[in-house]
Image 1: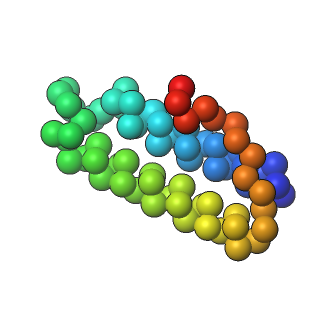
Image 2: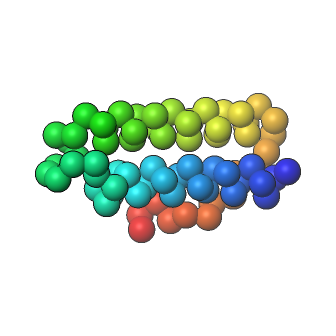
Length: 70
């Protein structure tokens, strides 16, 4: 259960990093000008926060798989 929960968290964080990095922009141009990209990032940030809260409620330790600076 711990491994599964952390893999799911890692996947969500990976998707968030991908979108924040600008690689997955829906339209050309800066991500800040793209309302769809901003909405996706906001949704992923909420999912990451919700997943971390759920893990905390169930005393599941967070294991770091993704380098936040990378």
